[in-house]
Structure formats: C-alpha cells, structure tokens
Image 1 (cartoon, rainbow, N blue to C red):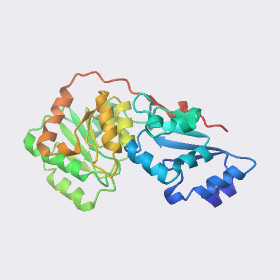
Image 2: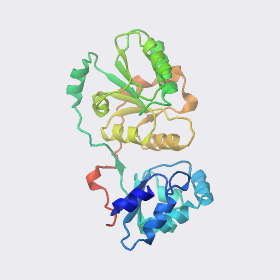
Image 3: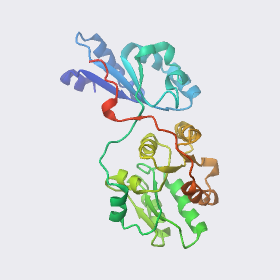
Length: 294
C-alpha cells in the first residue's frame, strides 16, 4: 500500500473498516500522506455497527485507534443512520471528531435486477409464495440453513410455499451436500451460488438470512419480509443489528439461542401472513453519499 500510494499519488484515500489497517499496516502510509505538501483527503468508512460498544472502546484505547483517527482522517463516513444506531456516540468518536463525522444512510447495491414477476417466471415458480434462504458467502451459514431444512421436515410433505437455498460459494462442500441430500422434494432447491442474487431476493415473498450489513440493507431496501437469524459470534455485530432492525419493525428475528428446527418451523407462515406496516428504511443510493474534501 505504501508504494502504491507513493506511485499513484491519489487525491482521496478511502480506508474501509479498520482505521490503522490489520496489525497497524496502514500507519506508515497514513504518516507519509500527512507529511506531503499536496495532502490528499483521507476518509474512514465504517459500517453502522462494528461490535459491542464497550469492546470497541476498550480495543481502540489499547491500540491507540482514537489518536490515529484524529491525526490522520479528515472525515469518518458511517454507512448507517444516527436514528437507528448512533455509532459516533456509542464508540466514543463524537467528542473527538465533531463535524468530521458524516452519516451516509444505509448504502445498498444498485445492481440492476429483474422484476418479481420476471424472475419468478424465469425460476418457474408454481406456488403462490416463494422463500429464499441466503447468507452472503456462506462460510458460516450451515447451522442456520440446516435448521431451516430440518424445519421443513416438521412442516410435512405438502409445503404451502417453494423455497430456494443459496448456500454461497464459501460453504464447505460436505455441508452443501448435506443440504442437497435433504432437499428431497420438488418445492425445495439448493443452489451453491447464483448470478444476480438481488433478482432472487426481489422474487421472494420472504427472505431468511443472517444479519450481515449487505444482506439486510438489500433486503429491506427492496421492502421484503425477512426472518433474520444472526450468527452467535465472534462479534456482537450481527445480534445487535438484528435486534435494532427488529425493534424498528423492519424484520423479524430469531436469535442463536432460539435456533432449533421447531422454532424455525413456526416462523415462515407467521411472517408471511403478517400485515404489520414496515417502517421507512433510511437508505441512500451511492449517488447521494457525501463527498469527502478533495
């Protein structure tokens, strides 16, 4: 990174998520940029939720992250909404940085996608309702998908919906094969990965997913009903995000301690039949993001 910045001399450096880089790898580059006469704008991009605030504050104090942000960053761009979760206040940034903090709203993919009707025709969906189960790359999605598959057995042979599992390319082959083995009826399909996943989400009446940033932002921006099952760890990020979104009525949530097939089986019909109004989602397309100083 140091050499690349020296050669290309950017007008803007946008750092994602880790202010000093992994194990401080960015610090030499950040110092070098502050010593240049033609200093570029340097911005830090943060997801809405990093981890439990007490854990983040302790880590950032120990690793002198607060000092690094104050010394080297012109702006901090929070990919979220203060009314949903005040990241600056919770993580102790507000007093230090003041006006340098900008909330961008939730940033969603603007990838073109097929309409619900076009995609359902493409998928040859025959039943009235379609459920899509997905979880990003899928490397830790098996427990959630296994519970969903076992829930289908509780619901019996004549499902009132069709369901598509998108495992993601990072799921272990053995876990994916277990899901395929148990998808033993026409209404259940298991796909490893797909092109244009947003079209699959748009075709669904209900999406079952984990609580990653991109997954929830896309689902809620498309105004889809969602059952969110956050991962247990290693950070509190997903459980916190699931709880915040559920409290706003944007999604329904089932927490790791409740992840048993019987509990999962009770959820899809309840969520599908719910007429609860969904709160407006504070999202921003990329064209409306604040521009860092150039």
